[in-house]
Image 1: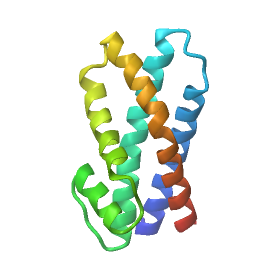
Image 2: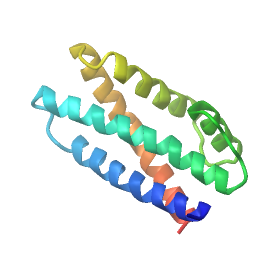
Image 3: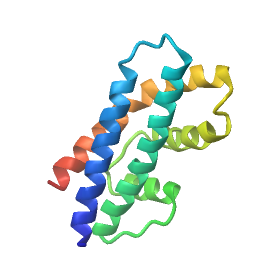
Length: 132
């Protein structure tokens, strides 16, 4: 499979995950399960964000190895701005796996996901346009 095909496949998967996360964020938060399900969708979306960025960078001849390195390279190419938001995104993803059952954490994390989501959507739309 060509590198560009891999990028496009990654973008399709990221689009699906982003759409599912957006749908979850539109459900009224009247049950704990809504917040937990949204957190799970967020985790999947973040994994796909960095893997898609990694594939796109590789297509451009840049070969990052880790999620943090991938984000740093995306900043240096001008694909991302607001570095604090993106570093927080990775930090939030790493913490969600470890603090998953703490009710106070789930509520706070849900609010943070709502704040971060627009950045994910902007990145997705940028990459879709770049690799259409």
